[in-house]
Length: 471
Ligand SMILES: *Cc1c(COP(=O)(O)O)cnc(C)c1O
Image (cartoon, rainbow, N blue to C red; front, side, top):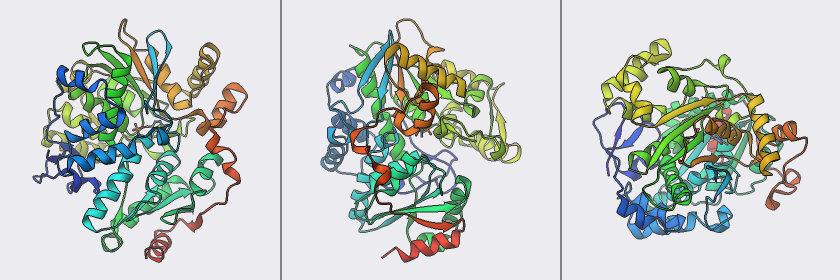
């Protein structure tokens, strides 16, 4: 399988080449040259596989530069009941007639990002050892991504993590999750500033090409193709659990921010998995809902990006959206560049409302969308507790609300549970008046010794710290 850039760069690459890279050289995102097709005979064979075996089958269609036996071993040691809490890895439960929750949040950091990041950790260690090379991952986090990356990379050979976060701004639980890690290859850097300062530092360091090369700086952000690919697997696993045979359609609702999770659903659907509808659930930051309603994609300014109670969906633009739009415009790289380089560059928006391609977003690609507010989240959390004795986190609550707006008779609706409620305890307390129970392994983590350095919001200070800790 070869990979191309959405912006038309002539080079083609193999999986392991793009594994450690971010954007393509022309600023585009990598996609496979085509989506391998899965027929009903293959679905029938896959239905009874374990999650690790299913992951191996799907990844094999996209990865041909890792020997199959090695890839199989990587999948087997990534997706274990020990790490993800059950043999099913992503167990499905019916909440009410026809509405299901698929649990993606029982990994080490209690958010769905573990599903992909745990695989990435093992792939990185494998590939770096094969090259005899090292990587220093520099990131910025306001919570979920940073902790998922640290728990995936801790103790891995050849990898160090330097994770910046805004000092004092994460929830006490999130801080404790990250700062209690004592692994030598994990470096927590609390920046005196806000999340944007952290992101600016990461950009500034990455733009210093000399430094970047000398210290082998890399990232693990959500545009990484391997992360997206890992997420394709749980759409198949959810489908098999929600159906008894492979001729039945299923719909999915996905609490969305950067469009990585739901883009994996788009890939699964493009491979032939019988998905009827993909519902994109957004919060008050409704860039994506606006697009799917109107055909207009309008990037928000920082001042128009709201801080909400489903913070992992607080985005001003959706960094994986370009992948879907590339497919939407028939993989026409020139048209894609017109939209993402010219139109977004000059007007901060593009308009496909009059383009026949926009109609296809719903008709051919199955996309629908919804938006919810803080009051909606509280209402869903209370209702789900009262009627089903089930606690959901605010992001999953956004999903449930959206799902109910797009139900179709006879078609199971699977809502992806993207985090556990304990991660967002303050909103649960606001809704229900009490803290959700926390898994045993997290009892008392706030009291553990912390491993973190405080640095000013200054790229030079962060560079000096990286240099100091690189041998
Ligand atoms: C990251 C995250 C999301 C958004 O996922 P995208 O892939 O960015 O669309 C939703 N919910 C939770 C809990 C998350 O951590």
